[in-house]
Amino acid sequence: MTAVLPLNDRSRELVLEVASALQPYFPDITANWRARIVQEFPLDERALATLERTTVATGSSYFCHGDFSGFFENVTYFGTRLAKLEVDTRVVSRALELYQEACEPYLASIFCDRRSQALWALEMLSASTFGAVSGAYFDTRSRESQALLSILDVELVDSSLDSMLQRVLEITCQTFDAVLGLVMLRDKESDLLRVHASLGLGPQLRGEFIFNLGQGFCDTIAKTGEPSIVLDTSRDPRVLSPEIKEKATTLWGVPLKYDGQTIAVMLIGFSKPYEWMPTERELMRAIADRSALAIDRAQITQTLRERESRIAELSSHLLRAQEEERRRISRELHDETGQALMVIRLYLDMLQASLVGKAPKTKVQETLDVVDRTIEGIRRIIARLSPMVLQELGLFAALRKEAKDLEKNSGVKTRVAISEQVGRLGPETEMTIYRIVQEALHNVAKHAQASKTNISMTRNNGTVKVLVEDDGIGIFPNSNFRGNSFGLAGIKERVSMLGGVVRVISLKGKGTRIEIDVPANEREEQQEIANVIPNSEILQAAAASGGESDTHAKD
Image (cartoon, rainbow, N blue to C red; front, side, top):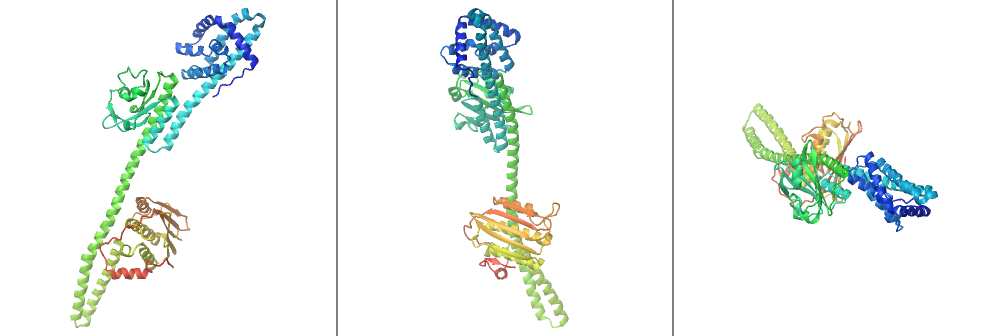
């Protein structure tokens, strides 16, 4: 806060005259004032000396040069120190009043009939001085509050532990005008301190271990759990870092404690000797307490993120393993079961040809029909396990085949609209989109009670947008939206694997809309995948779906 000078020119002239007249008597006045004030307030020498710097005795050296602005700047500075020393403003007001009373006997003998004018000048000066001190108090408290609020903001905004600690350290150093700082976290396994944030020091310190507990200044703080200060780094053997000794003369250190245990140490340094004031020490404690809570929350959040990441990796691995297992099973069904059924059918044909009676031929034909239905069922299972239409002819034909199957089996009219700009995508992206649409259509058939379904896919600025919507009954909170991929949970997990997003919009009686955005990973090369159903069947399926070259497949 800028010092306000309420004294007009006439008042300044009168204050200068009074201060000059009292100049020879200030030693006696100050001694009398000191004796009286210590009788009323238990002030230590540091607080008493600071109060003295706000009196007219100190101001006289400024007034004689006409430097009233310099005096009030001096008052503001020492007012800030009084605030940090936790001297109450009522004590300051009483101290100024007592100094004025100590001056009154001398005013009577010096100014005689002008005594009231001289007294009025001192009163005006005391009032202006107290105003400047009060402003300094307000600025000090505001600065302390702002520091704590800023740290709270950092806690709410920064998600990374190291980023949060760096911002906390920057705010702390800025609040106290420190030239360097460190935040070291206590390693739970090795019980050593590791630097996670630094300011004014070389970046090579980041991540290093710093001694065992009990060795060095910071480690002593971590072991004792109490704040500490070093006034001269060059002479204190606890300061072990040459770089810190070179850049800082004074060090302040506080422990960051959570649940009674020291979890970190904060250290800030000053280029000049600087012994902390009571409020500065308490503010450091408050910052440390707030930061300790933030560290604990950040560590919990980081642990949860790591666990979520591991779960996501495991889920991704399981989904890939699931696809591999589907391919393996489909190959075995084709190579073993399918071939065995074809051999059985061949032998039955040969047996039927060798029979002469009508009844035996009818029985063999019935058996052939069962074998044909079994082969057809095996083919459907193979197609669902490992869709060769997708692998051989691409995503467009595969989606249209799924739409035709839905319409054929469930009577749900399905429209597929795919933009030509989509093109071929990476194998994993195509498989994920296919499985998602497959799952969505499965749930339409099983739960939605819909009459129409729309599937669309577009591409814009490197993002593929897939939309599946129906006119069914919607998804209810307690509905069992489940399928081969665990319903919505499976869809969301598959999309998250590609770094995409899912939006599900559903209203009772107004259907469900599933929107999916995934990165458009380009297909680098055509990959040959082992055949699991005959190529002729693939071509038939593609022909039935309208082929990949068509832009739209209508109802």
